[in-house]
Length: 93
Image (cartoon, rainbow, N blue to C red; front, side, top):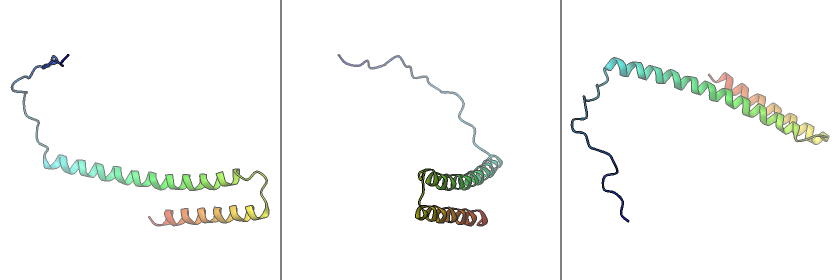
């Protein structure tokens, strides 16, 4: 069995008024709004970086329930690296 040629839709002639064109002021306002939004997104990514790195350091400590001396030193060095990386990211504004 073949599909119907017209599945119930009709073509309407003269589809209405054309869409209005954006003015220069509207384009400038949109550009400013997008710039502010992108700056907020970068700030959120920087905060997300801190959350992920500190979460990773915490998770590393949780994974070692009875740590040896070597594991304590290893986790402490990783935690210091996380602090240094976050300090570099924060001061690079």
